[in-house]
Amino acid sequence: MLVVACAVWPARADESPSRGPDPPLETTSQRRSDAPPRPSRQQALERLGQAGLTRLGQGTVWINANELRLRRLLDALPANRDRILALQSQLEQQAAGNSQRWAALLAARRELRNEGGRLPATERRRIEGLVDSLLKQAVAPEQLGARPEIRAQVIQLINLRHETLLAVRWTRDLVPELPRPYSALEQEHEVAEALARLGPTHRLGPIGGYADQLPRLNVFERLVLTDWTPVYREAGQLRLGAILDGRLPVTFTWHEGSEPMLITANMAQALGLDALVGGAPRKLAVAPGREYELRPVRLRSLETGSCRVAGPFALVLPPEAEDLGARVGPAAFLGWVLNLQAEQLKLSFQPTP
Image 1: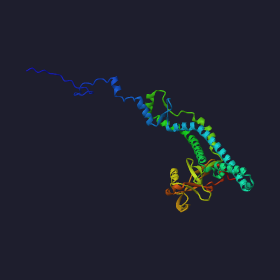
Image 2 (image 1 turned 120 degrees about the vertical axis):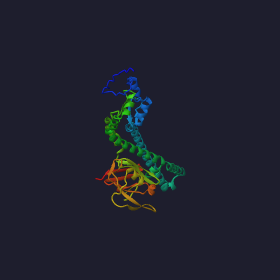
Image 3 (image 1 turned 90 degrees about the vertical axis):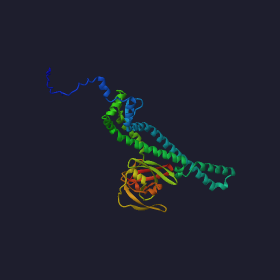
Image 4 (image 1 turned 180 degrees about the horizontal axis):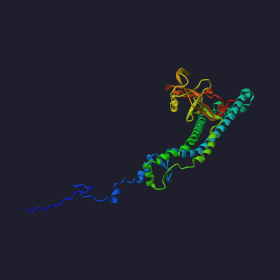
């Protein structure tokens, strides 16, 4: 038998005797196919929307909800100013006209009462017709705010004043902090990728230039921080608007008395006033046959026009007394002299000398 000897070479240290054939080299096209797919344009738009961003018009700047609201408020301020001035002028004219017609009505009634028996029949009929006409056009000046069309205008004026003042203050607080959330978004990979997909000019806000607009806010603030506040009548009660803790607009019924300010349970909840301040609940008869235990709270501020009271005391009505609404009177305005001018639809105030 012939035996053939075969030499067996030892394996190298870097290879295994059982190793199979080397895999083929990876191509560039294969590496690209394994990478995450680039988002489509539609996906990029959706990602930015999910991040709370809105494209400004048809441009390439993406802004958040706060900046979008800021721009709308700044755009609305001039229109608010014009509407406030127009309403104030209309109400002043209507109050003056009503006072003149009411004075003429009283004069005509006096003439009928004092001279009616001596007047010719035609003159008496003329004066009686004048009285009838004036009765349809005029009301007692202190009751002018009860007329539906006047009441609607005063309520609109109150709302515009509150809206303007809160917009001015919110803007002042926001502008210095506006860049902060954009800095955080710049670190998010998906946001950066979505912007890149839309094109090199697409970027995050802010737009800029807001700090330059802050000084002009003083004009709008002075417009509403007057030494008077509008008043009207509803259901026989005098009402006025105010802002609690610098952020919550409310409507108060005016109460000529010494009772403390009353606020509703919903108002207290909106302000986060849950803890008792100043002692145990107090029993108080707030309406005929309706006596409740009211919990005391301390507010940060009470504002109406330029009148601001810091740290006023208030009592909170229970939920079952919500229908009574909030009430305020002279006792809440410590440090201020108040002058009710219902015939002019105003409550005026001056700091105590």
